Amino acid sequence: MLILGIESSCDETGVALVQLDLNAPRRSIPKLLGAALHSQIEMHRAYGGVVPELASRDHIRRLIPLTKQVLASADAALDAIDLIAFTRGPGLAGALLVGSAAACALGSALGKPVLGVHHLEGHLLSPFLSADPPEFPFIALLVSGGHTQLMRVDGVGEYALLGETIDDAAGEAFDKTAKLLDLPYPGGPQLAKLAESGDSQAFKFPRPLLHSGDLDFSFAGLKTAVLTQVKRLVGDVPEGATVRGAGIESLSHETQRNLAASIQAAITEVLVKKSLKAVQQSDLNRLVVAGGVGANKSLREQLNAACKAKGIRVHYPELHLCTDNGAMIALAAAMRLQTKKRSPLGTTLLM
Ligand code: KG4
Ligand code: ZN
Image (cartoon, rainbow, N blue to C red; front, side):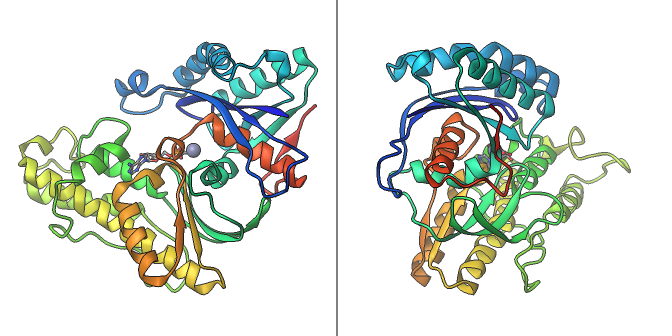
């Protein structure tokens, strides 16, 4: 069975084709036959962030060429597709609408069913496409641009939320503090790059809720702490002004690198400690990391070291599957069909 996956929730148009053998044993992982992705980063960069209307229009332009590209690379005909999966949310309304409209139109033209997939379920299951796929059950750390959650995952559709952010997500913390440092969009990877050669001990930023006793997170205070610190370093910033455009460039490159490294350390320390706590509070010894922030090198290094010390196995998606892509949507649909369970996160069989 061939499943086409369409992702269009934000600033990436992703299309992929996955093969599911319904007669294979339940544990066999669906196979990725082809994938294509178009990132809108260049287009949005001039505006310092995603412009929703531009995103929607670009998804419209990209979807058909990307679909043709995927089918050609997998040597598959359009009418060989058995099911079309698309991201049903969460995401930008207009951008989601493009993906769902394209999926429904294709489904209607081919007379094939269409399945709406929850974006976070796509991220959550994406490590199954890696060279070192996990096995159920496991604790998952889901760290994307809009969500930071710890979950117990017993199988496809069997998700129990253990803790989550009460304000900003980890990705948002990366992006917002990167903006304060006047780094170009998308801030997270830029800040991580700058941090590579910085001193993570140079500045002491808060680790909110680190000792709260629960598995919740809070990152909103970090940007205020960074803003205060940078204002102190820059000096005479007018009341109410953001640091941006108010002299960040007057700081030495070394100070900027140290700021970036210290910000990254504050975010990753909380993620690592709470993830370990979640695993240790469970009867499990497996951690799965998913979502865009899961691409962060320092986070991976710290998690690897901490998990090794505690005898915990840790799994990640392949780097190119950490951020949004069509493969995770096709895979989530395939794994759902394999287990024949409806998603508590909301999977819709439309046709
Ligand atoms: O999962 P994702 O692609 O989109 C959402 O579903 O939100 O995650 C995007 C987030 C952004 O906040 C981005 O800055 C962050 O992931 N991100 C990173 C890195 N790569 C992406 N944050 C830190 N370090 C990275 N290397
Ligand atoms: Zn995402």
